[in-house]
Length: 490
Image (cartoon, rainbow, N blue to C red; front, side, top):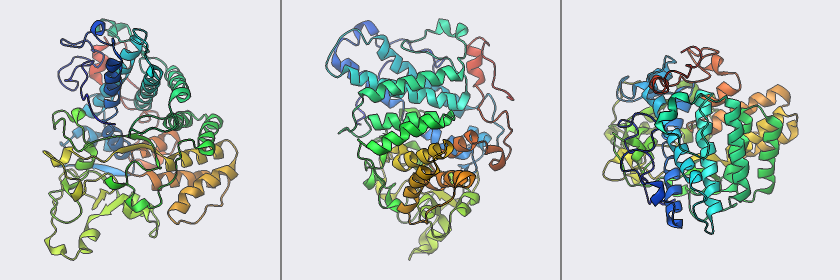
């Protein structure tokens, strides 16, 4: 989707520094609703503003990997994005800028969507139902992020919330939040088209895939199997597995049939290090780059989100996904004809010898003016392989091992790995293992470990009864007048 209106004046532009609360969406110079939503173009501008709030996907990618056994924070030093290092070490608390950003970004997205619904009856025009369906799906996505991270959260639907109401707005039980998420997604599925001509625009397939994921995270396995099975069987979006896993994450191979739910980026900068939320490019890609790298194929970067030895060793040696997922920097250098001329630096935030090889800046993807902030590599929130593996899990957990094996082995066949013939718990464990191999580096691992009860066995320092959720940012508790209890253990 073209980034036409980067910052629609519905929420404060200084979201990470200037505003007093993520719920303060009526700052000075805001576009007055009475003078807005009077034309179809106003609604089009508003929905672009909601789409923009999905761009901070780097937060989910980083935290979903760094909080797990898949990677470490990396960076220049332990004080370089300190909140990620705290999450890596499982000693994060209520003062954590990255977690505060997660809450603010997602509530800003919700506020922008609600602003549309608050004014939905001002005018009618052809296509308004599609805009409302897009807004509902994105609101569901934002609330899903919040409930995964923080559990119970204030549920605000179809209206903005003034700053004066904050102190009397309690956290809603997560069951109510999930119910709203499901309602929004089911409604959007009925309206969204199966296919679109504009990259990044939402589809009914994307909404169905997200609904399947939402159901899976609630252990609603039979319902998830129905939704995901129907998506696979009908496949109105024409989805399929990209044949070459090793090149799937190159910019040249974006917008392929594997892409179900995708966030689009461009090579334009838009923001800077003081406002990563303002970027047009995918911030994760440049930050994953090799520090002070001089050599072929790759571009330099900041050495964030470094894969662990444990992840590297989890792959079979003949699994092509290992090297497509993880860059072994020394092995790569030694294989080059000019190896003596290739140099790089090790950051003080940790070094494993490995780098993210899916979302990493390549030399032919350089942008201007700042190379670290201008990647046009889209983020695949959900791709077809994930749909198949979610379906495999849902079918297995609801008693259909045969269908589970079918979907699992589609994923393995694509990378020339032998079929799995197991049943019962052995099959279930094989599916979970396949999720790690197939989806590593994409931000799923921590949530998979938590929701399947395996986090304590896999994550050093993980405390059962505490670390399943992240802490509510203390400043937001204070802004709410102290009526929100902190999550257990923090």
